[in-house]
Image (cartoon, rainbow, N blue to C red; front, side, top):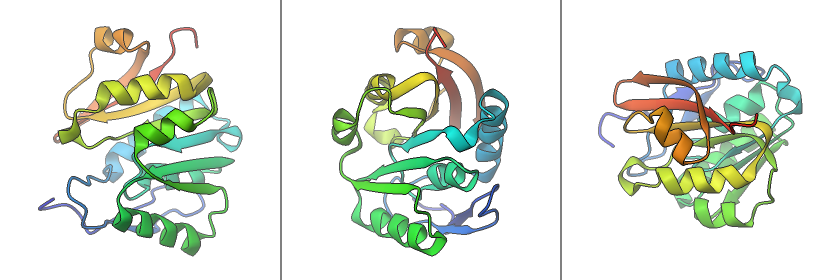
Length: 191
């Protein structure tokens, strides 16, 4: 992607200020620092028990979202990525940080999601490639994987309305917009 940053950084926790390389993968858009800062402010307000959380970064890319959660003390973070170059970057970062709580799974995000156990994750990050139109399929997959009182973070090219969230089986908790990215925090209506 022309104009994409060559690196982003972890903005909080144990690995604060650690740079993460951005592989030259078509369509890779690392979540901007400002958006991650907003997201984690929301998350820490709603779920201050970060050390007890398990997270899933379903379309990991640089791993910025998953490594950010791990940096803040999550007990387990699973990252799923299909592109070999991005996978190499994730593995190198995990090794460099000695991030033993981070598991990396190679494969198609939705296929891997279909094999993961029901209700296994307290936080699911969804940042699918915008051009692939995977928003709905990703939300359907995440709904089954989400633990009680869990949260879903969704990045999309357009804002998800409360009605669209409800159609996908979720309640829209918070939403924001930065540049060409709309970002959302969702939860099950019963949470």
